[in-house]
Amino acid sequence: MKLFMDLFSSDVGLFSIATIGIVLGMGAFYVRYFIGHMHADEARAAAQKS
Image (tube, rainbow, N blue to C red):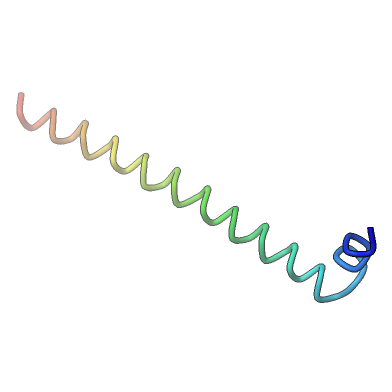
């Protein structure tokens, strides 16, 4: 329980939580971004074949 108290009450713990949140957010953004562009490239390639 002391671990969670230190994590949520100390500056280092709060910065750690913020960093983890930012990294997870960036990961989700890039996965969505890359998948969207992959689908757009597939659609463009299919349109050029026809």
